[in-house]
Each structure stands twice: as structure tokens, then as C-alpha cells.
Length: 511
Image 1: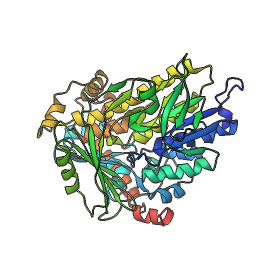
Image 2: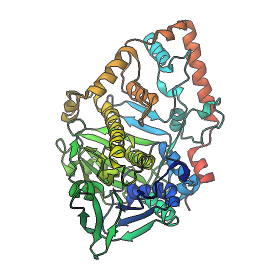
Image 3: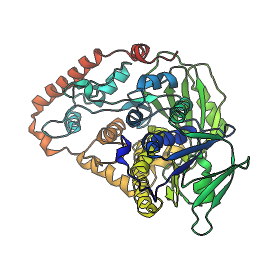
């Protein structure tokens, strides 16, 4: 996201002077915050209309490290945000029972080891695996070892220090985050209007949206509209009739049931995703409660059985009534049509297996600000924006699907269905390349870089058949000592870290 108003230039004659955001929640208030921090100083008027009578989905409580940079660009103090949202820190996601029942690994926000001779560290791990040496990736990752030991501190500023080799995210109350951003936005001139929309007016000649009318009769006109109305897609779907790309053939889970409970034991600096017979269950620890949810495929389990399964696995006293959600995994065929951009659930939904919901909102906002149009430049901006969002959604889709298909599980109809699935060519190529050579396809854009793919590959027992020839320069007799030295360096560094609880107590405990 641009850092200041100087990075955005708007021609006065053709300027978009008024933006109307339809819907609040995380997507709406993140959109308002991004726009008001960059474009409001240039005279852009921002109106957000929402109704307290219309509930929000309320998930997206676990995040990726990218959210820190979004908040930083807004000038938000991290400790204040953590207190306000009753947040904990997140070093990664623990995956249980995915490769096979009994397996457990952590996808960390950080590197594994250090490149040697300009060769990825994982090639040396592959060699150790073939030699029968201890070769579990965990011991070569600061965030994994810290998570296992319930430790946390912010990364070291010195990039030569091993404690600089990781990132972190938040586990927070999404409703409180939206409320926090609302205060931020209103203090910077964003106007919030309470009310339900019962009519959308389009220009009869070109179909652009001209206004939305509330039940009260008040009409809100605008030059540009952002649809944050959730699954119903009031503007992008109901008004502009943009079709939806249905990806349930690859990601068949179509429902979820959620509930909060009391925590038993200390707050952990990581999210859990435990594979079950017909989907998977999340555990997200906050300061005041634990969020839980079972994401499942209704073709293989009933709503009642899914709810009972989720509730039976709660660790503490249940704090909320179960909430059921229905969804269709996929993406809007175009995120930006005419003078309307769909952000959040109105633009697409990918199950929260890797906490990508808020990330995709953030990317949508960042791209919109960087390509913010004039009233005469829609066409070029639209095409590029839609191209970038297609890339983001498809790369996240492939990474999520990897978890399901990199498995030997065949203990239920759900898992047998997945193992027989025809993969998208984009993912099939990635897996085949890694199985053969250990190479990971890298992209400049996209949420997940090499360490993320490596965590899932090795964690779910996909080991390359061959290693990079450059890794063979190290004799077998030296390899064991080299790996041991890296492991010891990381173990010593993690021992010096604060406990997660002590760090929260010292910096951001909610009152």
C-alpha cells in the first residue's frame, strides 16, 4: 500500500471524488482505512453504509504476517491493536493428521536453516533423510521450535542474528478489529451511515452504479463503489450479475460450524488445524477465549454430526452457541466491473485453512489504491486489477489443495475422494517437480513462498527423489556435523526467548 498521498496523483477534472463502501465488517473497515489513509488527504470523500441488523461472518481471526505491514502503513501502534482485539501472537499453523493420522508439523512464518553454497537448505535435509540421519525440519526453524516451547519475541533487528529469520502474525477477535478500524476511520473523516439498502440505481446507458437507496429513502450517490456485503454480493452479484467461478470440484468443503470456548492451559503462539473424517477443525487461541470451527463437506457428513464432532473436541467450557455457515469455494469471475470492486466474501471465498481471508482483503485494497482510477481510466485499471486478483486467488487455491492431496489417508469416503481427484495443471506441475528434483517454483507475488511449500511437502511426507547437485559438494562425513551445528544454534537462541505469556503480559495484555 502506498505510504503517503504523494504516491497517488489524481487529475482534478476526472477525479473520483466520492467512494461508497457497502458493508462493514473486516472487509469494509479495512477498505475504508486503506483509502482514508492515502486518498482522503487529496479530497476523496468516503462513505461506509452498514446495518447492525445484518450480522457479519465473524471468522478470519487468524492472520498472516502481511497484516502487520498493512497496519504499520496506517500508523497503527501494534501494542494498542493487540490490547483492543485481545490478540495473541502467531508464529505459524500446526497441522495434525494431514499426511496420515498421527502426523504433526508446523507451517512456520520463517526460514528453515540457511542456504549453503547458494543451495536451498532443504536439499541437505533430503540428503540426511536418505542417509538415515535425523532430518525433521522442525529443529532447523526458529518459529517452529519457539512455538513448540511456547516462546515469543519480536524478530531481532540485526539480520545476522538467527532470531531475525522469522515473521509473525496475530490471532485476534475479528469483530474487535473491525471496531478498532472504525474508530480509526471516523477520526480521519470517514462517514458511517446506519441502514439497510433496498435499491441500487444504475445508469440506463452504460450500467454503472450511480447510487444506493436506504430503507429510510435516503439516496447515497457515488463515483465509485466497493462491495463488502459478504456472500450475498449486493452490488457485484445481485446488481451487476457477475458470475462466480465455483471451485468445489477441487475444494469440496462447503460448510462450517463454529463456537468459542474457554482456554485450558497457556495461550499458544500458533493456530491448530486438525484433519478429521470429513474436513478439518481449527483452534485459534485469543487472550479471552479460544475460537473453534469444523470446516466440512456436507456430502460426507450431516450438519448435526459435524456440530457434535466439533463440540466434542472443545477443550473447555463452551462460551457461545454453535453458528453454522454455508459457502461455495471459488472466486468472482471479475472482481472489478464497471465502477464497482468486490472485496472480501463478495469477491470470493477460500476456506481458512491457511488464514488467507484477511490477506486477500488486504491485497485487494492494496491493488485498488495502487491502481485507483479516474472516471475516464476504468478499463485499463480494471483489466490489470482483475489479472492480479486472479493470480492471488489461484495460487492460494493451489496451496490449500496441496494439503488435501499430499496424503496417504484413505480412512473415510472424504479422503478417498480427494486422493482420486484430478488436480489443476498448475498444482500437478509443482508437485511433480518437487518430487523429482526438490525444486520449488518461486513467484514474486503470492502469499506463500518457498518455506511454506517446503513445510507442507516435508510435513506430509513428500520427499524429493533427487537433490540439487550443488549440495553434493559437502561430504557425507561433514553433513551431519553441519546440520547439528545449525540445530544447536537455533535451540540455544530459542531458549533465550521470552515465554509467549510473559511477552503479552509485558507489552499488550488486554485490561
